[in-house]
Image (tube, rainbow, N blue to C red):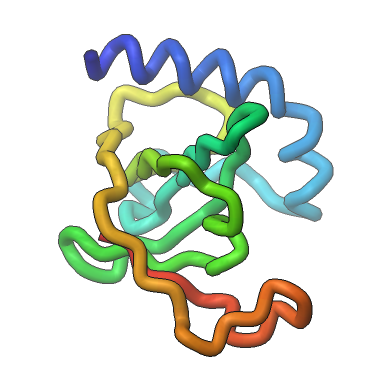
Length: 118
């Protein structure tokens, strides 16, 4: 299962490679292990998937933007990621089982755009 997830994610990320390169202005891939708290979120929606970033703030709690969950069907977190674009042996896929969105989050104004995931 773990290897299958690696292959599936690698294919999906490759499809979005050019889009991600444009979104991160002046960014560089990090050295392996440099930011072990960085997490990639694969968000499944009705018409496909998209990706968000998150930070591991506790052993099983992630902090991210609430707008990553607006139409989500499910989310998969890849902890200890150094690049959005290259599948890595360090990936630790985890299914998101609990979502806590700031009670005053407004998708229109993006105020209080914060969410915790477990």
